[in-house]
Image (tube, rainbow, N blue to C red; front, side, top):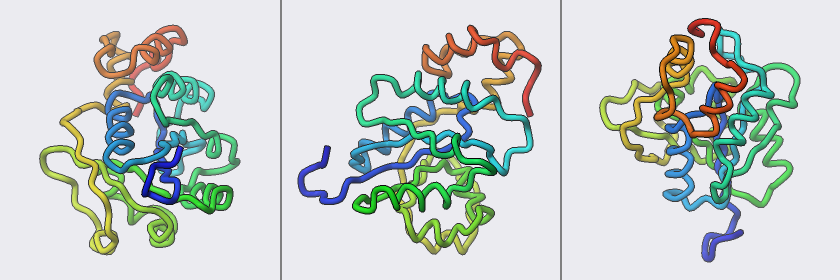
Length: 204
């Protein structure tokens, strides 16, 4: 649904490995949806993340966990575009394809502060930033340094509460048999248990 007075449909793109998705992901998407007045937040799990050195959990499991995370959330949608694409997942390829399918939309790219700090290593990042409004999740405390060239491009800050949660920590907790119920949505905790994910020792 379009919002009165805003004109173009406003779509937030929220990509990531989501291995697993957790409460900080959910909070970022909710804040961005509300603060940026987005008509839609589109969750896009990476197919083959080109910058990840570890083995990533299968796309089928990650898709199922993201769908459980966004179930019942207003204006959250799921997109399989990167899962279905052969080869590495590059954000620019995704943005070009989506903009071609919905030219009459305004696009926001939601990223965390850690991704912002490494944005200068992304493929064709200047063209990417020319196509989207960059929305960076800022947490309290010191932010990692950002490349000066990247800083020249304007961005919108999405303030987040202090949520010290990482997928790496969750995988390690599961491998040690520690509880994760306070870190992930309930459906994701059940799914991880039912499918015995992350049990084979800490992922790196």
